[in-house]
Length: 245
Image (cartoon, rainbow, N blue to C red; front, side, top):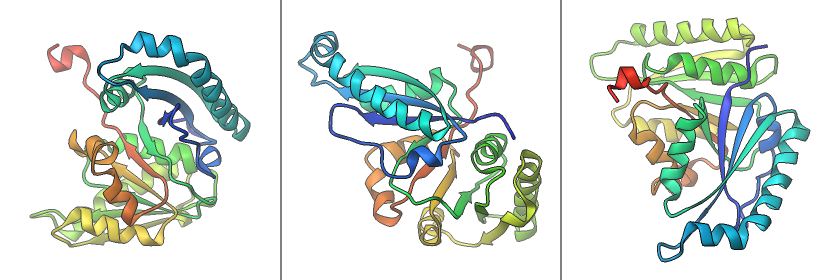
């Protein structure tokens, strides 16, 4: 079996947010970075909030940690009091080099998973996440691609067949992989409509806006169309030398 993919799970630990049913089992083959965070009002110092609420928050986080460990995942936890929840999520993704982040909507044991693929960027990480989570299981995977301008169906099938070969190398059964290509102008609408048939969705991060799309103000738009868990595979970040920092 492939190495465990690292998956970020952010939880608003003091706002009665719980771990939905089925999520620990879904992440049984992952290394889970469990981020417990609490957004502090601007007028309140984060240190003050930490002194007041840290013990309660940490106890709750430890309870969540046990759920994932009992399911078979490896877990590390981080507790943060912050003024900026979105920025904290993004920073934690970078610091832990997370392969994916998860919107943890409740799920039954998944039988069918949609893997939405845009292009070659980040494809290695898509294979790592999907293979790591679902190799040696009976979960059926549908590799899904919406044609872009100037792209032929043959090009798209070559892309998806290559990913399928990678997944087989990761331990996924060839009979459990299906390939689907569609031609739609509105890519997001096409993916949203396709989700109706599936228990979970994996999205490749095509650009920096995708993480914001999932975790920011538009998250509810996804939830209205798909109530299951959504993995957002993160692009590999450049090194300091590559980024010029």
